[in-house]
Length: 300
Image (cartoon, rainbow, N blue to C red):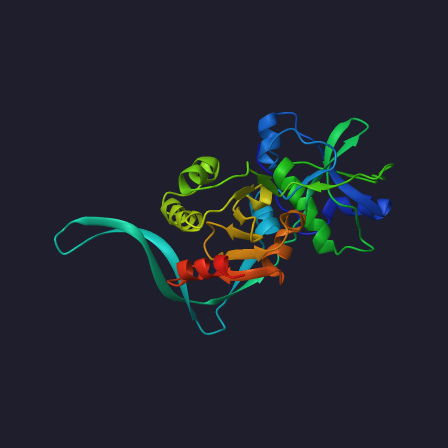
């Protein structure tokens, strides 16, 4: 069944939105376990569980990651990135490995992601997925249209209801799955991250393996994997020094190092984590990356 086209305006929903005033966008929680997992949940969710949906469609990708605007009106700048390649030496022998390449690119501006979460609420007819409360009096039409398109892309349908919660629901954001604590040398980390590695393209996998080898050489004792819209991130922690390394295979993403308590980080949005002034270091994947990583980890 084809997905509905994206809305450009409030369209047929305008009348009911105007009538309701304050409303939520809702859809029944899928019954199939695979459909629930596709939303980013690790298992059957309970009331209050809230997740940033994975970036598996155009709307969901913008919702989780924002979008990049290419500034062709500005001068080009150099950008370094890690790549994996195979080459032959003067004797015709084949070698493979990661290399740093630098190229001139147009400058880019990031349009911040909306980061709309999906929250589970128990309704009269069963569990449902719902948006936050919205209203034309406090939200722009652009915000509302984005939420409508997000539901249409994910579910293919939606309802708009005046859902007044009779009880306070404690919302629990499921951004990270924390793995068993203990030392994480590369072999254990690779096993624990098997699902994460499995989803990587063949040309990206060896680059990320090389980065994670470099991180695990410093003996992390904490590991977490992102869920939903955070699925492109893994976190290595050094609990004694209180430092946490965010690594991502997405091209253009830097390595972020935070020196903070993990519990507070788990409650922040991706924008707050990556774009705020919370990081202890931001490491570009260039020729200095390994040395900068070592210095940032050892720095008190």
